[in-house]
Image (tube, rainbow, N blue to C red; front, side, top):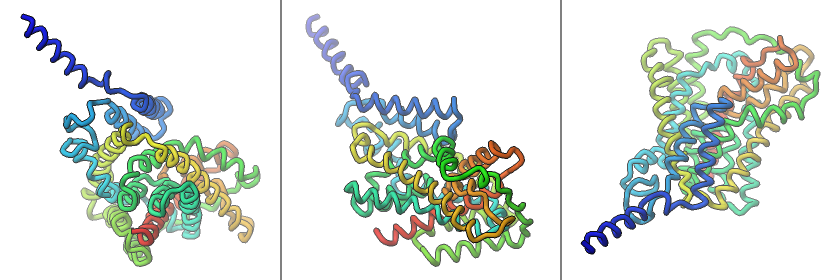
Length: 386
């Protein structure tokens, strides 16, 4: 009887050592709270729910504490676990090109083709990448880490994952969560900056309606765009190749099934996998470090610099444009590649000053240019630091 009781007691004690209650730390509690906040923002505030719900729930999954060293094969960093296999697509840069394929298949480049000068705004907004790179170096990150952190300024989660998986795989989780977090917070971060940098007259500038773009132009664009951009920076081929491939599937008019698959089921599946695994990678025992906190801070800095760069660049080129041809600087924020949220912010802020001034179509031009620009910037950084 005594031996039986001892056996039961020992078994119960061993069971307790495997429960989350005895393995939880303050780090886990902090990360669980962050995951719940992400889910709240997605549902209550509708901040990028397609991103924040998978990431937020992934944070919860990744921060259920378990006994370290027990070889349970459940943690995302444990070899042989299901999450580890799914995370392979992140750390090897497989998921980002698939995301770009879907983006290309659902993006209409007509507004960019109708007013090509707006592509310069997308290029100007990439200053956030190089600004954050300089700040990261100043904080002690090495060259490759600083380049990976800087790409957050492009407000492009897939590009951030792609670059960091090549240059700083140990920082992929922190960089990805930071990039997607700031993408979701576009409606909060950008409007105050846009109002700060513009006056009432500038906010009411009315732009000429975009011209009609022919089908031939739409078909030629992904071919010419691919060759021009990848000849400049071949390192960006995995991203830009898939982006333009997805777009020609859409614009050719003869591959509707492929286009629909890329723009709907495929991108949805990859978004689920990338969001869940990136969220789970915030496992407190590995993720919660001073470097991660520094990356979050630099992410905010880079995003702010990018927004400043886009708006101020429009104000600069307006100095050389005659009346009637000026660009509304409220679309400068859309130079970051958070498609289509930053373009929607341009529309929202513009309508708040003039209910008849619709900027969405104009803002989509620098917005999609920002997607291309961030990929080109990533390719340039990859060429320098690989």
